[in-house]
Image (cartoon, rainbow, N blue to C red; front, side, top):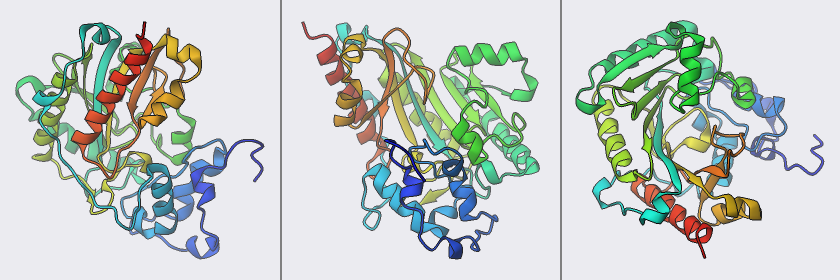
Length: 339
């Protein structure tokens, strides 16, 4: 396949040479290697392009998943072991006031897959609705500052959905071409929904890309509170639902770029000077950070504000990754605010 100056996706790079043999192999959920690579085939501009339609795919199709994971996450899969430590939120450092003023909002999320179900593209409509009902029931039992209400997308008006999307509370409305090709939007919007606590700073996305995305967020440079709330929510959810966890790859997700901790910790931060210099991506990559536009992956910045998050998800603990992001953002602001 010709790409001009564009590098091939990781899926194309590591596609097994004996593909004919692999096409006849299936997981117990019926997944084939074609299901895993379909998005990369339809979108030659993909970076990764590989998706896991069910948890078994990670090992059934190890010949492609393992090298893609090794390359993307820069890990030695042979030696990789799932490690987890949520740490102590009270020990996170506060930023100086001048730095804190540059941060518009702070947000941390983890992705999870509920045991016994395939991922998005292999769920039937009945399974998706059953999964939504189970998650909805679990969420209804949360109490204290985590207590709230659940709404299915099909129960919302277009205006209601749009308002929540604009507030960065609800996921975008089936607009990612890579995820669409992978089957992530099958039956959309059926079986999808959102849970919000009363303060709207604890959110759970249901059946978007992953079964569950548990999110803690608030305005300003408030990582201590945001992380503390998320840890509390993770512990509460784990008493009500069992999540898929792999000995090597940790928590499994639909896209292998999110496996391990399943953690994405981010800030929306004003860095117009660095952005204008053209060095934002280079500086972020040197600190294992990933810059994006404020409306998510594959979007542009608005007014010099960028979404900066940890790029690494695996091989290190949640506590380590949270601190890596926070220290990196501080260094970024050292450069931005340099007199």
